[in-house]
Length: 338
Ligand code: PEP
Ligand code: MN
Image (tube, rainbow, N blue to C red; front, side):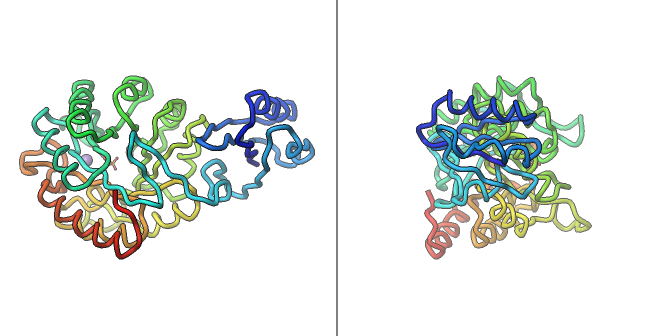
């Protein structure tokens, strides 16, 4: 069960409800949103029913959620949520382009990608400073130095930055530099990490695990929300199937299910899904046509020299061409491309 508090509910009102739930043997997880604070109740729903919580001061209404995920469930918020990343918005009203290098390699390389992203109308810059690599011998990212480079790119372009964090112990540091924290596909069920990013006030971009069902993905988001952070953007980035022609199989159907099941914005990463540059633009166009809330695209000024995922990187020129298509599609579909 979820308790939705009134706009003007006080801390004392919230604590009164939480205390009552704890007395009844349950747990109360408070999530403070921009408009409403909600309290997720975990425990025996039947015992909560008799508490008369709907008559408590500050309580707006109660919602019974018949799903394993509650705070992120659509039933909680019939209206889709818009998540702000710095000045940029990700939600159903707009279509957001997030672009940048897979990995931050140097000032020059990151800046070229960031300026290309800006020129193509991207409103958020992506770039990895901590890279999850299959091989320990591959480039692992520049770490904190990469975060500093991203901050300089933000200063240069005005674009807010999303970057991956891989370990709970790095969350504080990464959050001190970034505008949004990315949890990658390999860490989607790193529950310690999910709890840690859930305890920050930075938006979280949660990628779908490459072997995760939509339900498991939403349960991962629930871990973040349960810790008090409901500013979550879901990202479909392809799942592992028998097919080897593409790096992963882009599950646009799963993207739509996630949008219908949750109130969170859902974007698509066609770069990591496809793995080949020539397949990125067709699937980015498919993503907007299917109703995605945005795309995240890898960009490199010299993909042949990239230290990570060069084969899937678009050049700034390719990205500009793609953004013209996305603009035309947005217009036809009544979406606003910002
Ligand atoms: C990335 O976006 O840089 C990345 C590593 O993606 P994924 O976690 O989807 O593989
Ligand atoms: Mn990559």
